[in-house]
Length: 95
Image (cartoon, rainbow, N blue to C red; front, side, top):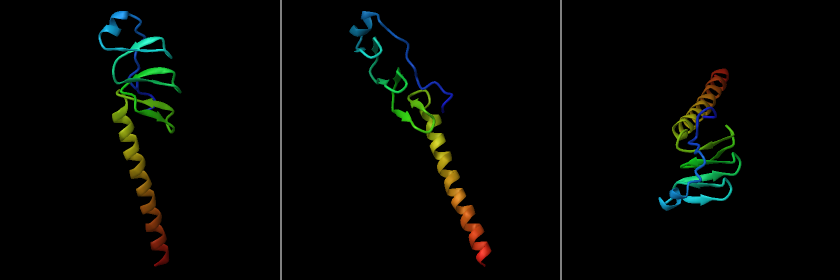
């Protein structure tokens, strides 16, 4: 997840983009398309920005959402597997 492009957008200062439905973003000094948001921590525009992941330190957007969801599913599987292994070992030692 942390090595994937989250959907970074290049700066667009052409005023025709504003006429095409894009919005001016003062933090970046660029026009942004609908759905793109500015990430304060990353200091970039990200297409379909969702959030900043505290575990990977990466903005999550269109480009890495699938990989972020796979990461979350795998972390849950590993947690439940760890709990199962510990429970198995404890029950085996008791009996």
